[in-house]
View 1 (cartoon, rainbow, N blue to C red):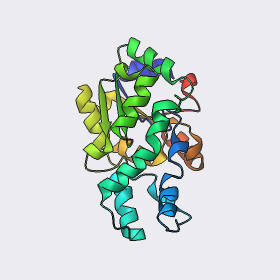
View 2: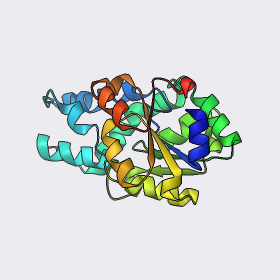
View 3: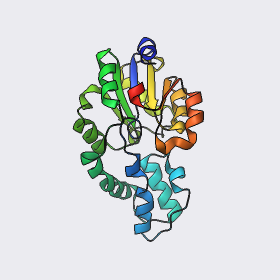
View 4: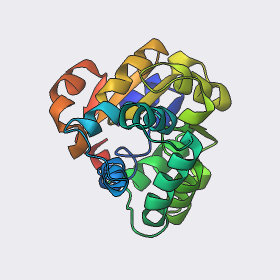
Length: 217
């Protein structure tokens, strides 16, 4: 697969959480725990409803659905504070991530990040693992108008990389993001993560490539 990627594409765009870093557990129950702390009873399907949302969309959702009288910015700040320590100290890279990034960079590929995470966490975890400088573009969903089911963030990252969309391939663990990748006209590598196990089979079948581990890419 790697040789095919190198022949076909000039730029690789990586999702962060669940793709490059093993961080999904840090987010699994953040909103649920936060709501419980506010005396609210979280719905059983809360995490499924939030999985494709940006932090801003998630904050707006809980404000409306749970009648929370706080501004979105304050809610987001509280959520970010709950997970930042883990990005700074404990969250690890996915298996093979560092080696793959270095190999792609050495081959001349332009590398970017397109993530729903927040800048302080993203910058911290990449720097701590020594791979920050391989990425010439970092784009966050809060800097574009829509979430990753739309093409906006992928197109913005390609623009920053000075790459044509058709020359880009996206590494992503969330099946719902495939719609945005396809709308952007880019290739897709499905990366397995336990958090997306329920959608893995259709993601694997619909993506251009699929890997259980980046060490096999």
